[in-house]
Length: 341
Figure 1: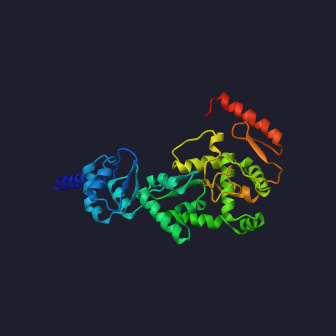
Figure 2 (figure 1 turned 90 degrees about the vertical axis):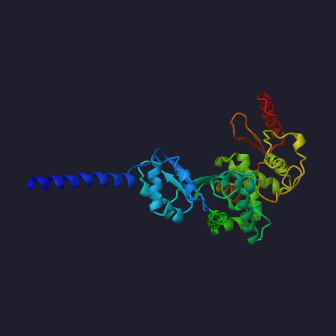
Figure 3 (figure 1 turned 180 degrees about the horizontal axis):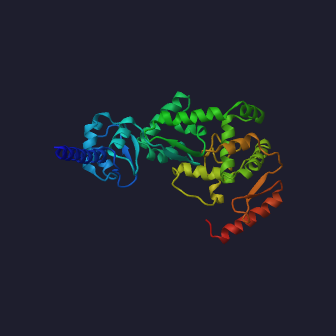
């Protein structure tokens, strides 16, 4: 009798272990074949969710079964979800139901205009670029501007994190908050002392950024030089403004590596060879260092600058037209030797 009871108990344990293992494997055992990210739109069908997940899960049938049991079809949240090894079906389904999505990194570079930036940024969001632009245009009008291009000064070059489901309003709020934080009382005092409007500061900062190639160690010197030209009522004569003027006309499809004399007459209010004064706005998205360089420009007597072929990415500065002619000739000879056109 005792032996029969022991056998029954053993069978119960075996059966319990067997079903327990199956339960654990179905719900909590690793079901990821390879790591990846699953994108689930707001209006996704259950089939779309399963199809997207199938690229990464090992046992598709068990994932579907658990998803159905947990009513994923009704209670999912849109997002970009990281399917990583070690996660079981229950973990995956609960993650999607809770909306625990992973952020994506967005690199804001020295884009020539906001529309060019949106074209890149929107590829990492659920919305298409047209919807993104339309919403940013609406935000600009709420702020009293003409369109999204007038928001350029709110963006700074850097890497930012956003969710795939970010809306244009949420996206811009991050930069609006950053802009307001950047313009603290100290910088506002520098702004007043400069005698420049904020738009002029950003326009000069964009020239400084382009001329310096983003190198911080020359920015204050370049800013001082251009302020000298501006205050002497001289044309700024900045090559990047000519490149920008041409790029605007071609919708940024041309890649100009060298500015020739024929380019200098390009009709545009941004062309500082054709017009005196500071351009009406920035020629690119800037970084914080370039704005600070304008606010705290180096006091120097430089009027001319020319790329230094001996130090790639850096410049030779001078107050002498004669010396500048020598520097410019050396640079032109270097360009010709490299067949840069």
